[in-house]
Amino acid sequence: MNIISTKSNEDKVNTITEMCKLFKVSARTLRFYESKELLFPIRRGQNRLFTKSDRGRMKLIMQGKRFGFSLEEIRQLLNLYNFGDHRTRQIKQTYQLGLKRLSSMEQQKKELGVAIKDLKAQLQLCKDLLLKRGADSRDL
Amino acid sequence: MNIISTKSNEDKVNTITEMCKLFKVSARTLRFYESKELLFPIRRGQNRLFTKSDRGRMKLIMQGKRFGFSLEEIRQLLNLYNFGDHRTRQIKQTYQLGLKRLSSMEQQKKELGVAIKDLKAQLQLCKDLLLKRGADSRDL
DNA sequence: GTTATCCTTGACGTCAACGTCAAAAGAATT
DNA sequence: AATTCTTTTGACGTTGACGTCAAGGATAAC
Image (cartoon, rainbow over all chains, first blue to last red):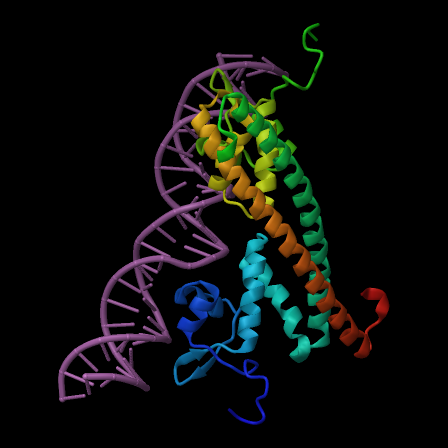
């Protein structure tokens, strides 16, 4: 342990199998994401090493997928989290995209709230019917 | 207008093109959904007529898609809204599925809240950088 | 009657997001 | 040195969710 690297996991790198376990995806998926420029693992020889940046990106990728975004949509947004090394014009574009995405996500959250309310009501109706049909309330 | 049908749009039926416009999808999509048993239009001759039930289902389908669910997942849940004509055991299963889906959606809403917060923060950072680089604050 | 318009059923094509398999290269273990 | 394990790079396969013709029936308009 070097005296400089007090933040032990800051500069830690992962092999591909470690990443697989970390994010519960296949190696194929990670290579695929690299080919699509969502990840940028460095190389030791010909092997991939995934850095903290890649871990952060993967987290965002999984999140984005959960919310129903396509990989391409996610890729564009990922630049928002690495804007240091881009040109101003590109950052501006990504920023605009981020604003759109934000409002889309806020909208989705609102809709989700309504859908949840509906589903709850429907489940209640369903439950009532089941009880009326003589179901045991313990297995509901 | 029949004296019995006071609820004018309750028993209204739509042709396929009407449905297309109503939900902004293609006819192919509607036929595809029927083939996958997500919709059950009645027939006049060989033509499809979409009922109120189908309209309700379509609303739920679009919603489900927005939230990232697959058509198969959506199909299973749709039974929750038409449980009148099913057997108790099946309803019970659908009910259980609904509970799972509910908690999944609630989880998703929570994650969405966090992601929105993160994105906002990131956008702020981005904005600061752009301003520092001399961007005009009016086009942000 | 025929032209035009909707609608139908196949059947094949496409695109995203991977899965799967083969061949080979490197490192590690015995 | 031989074997095992991890990983690599192709390359082809698959699945979900449709798109896109092609060929034909039904109905309304002229």
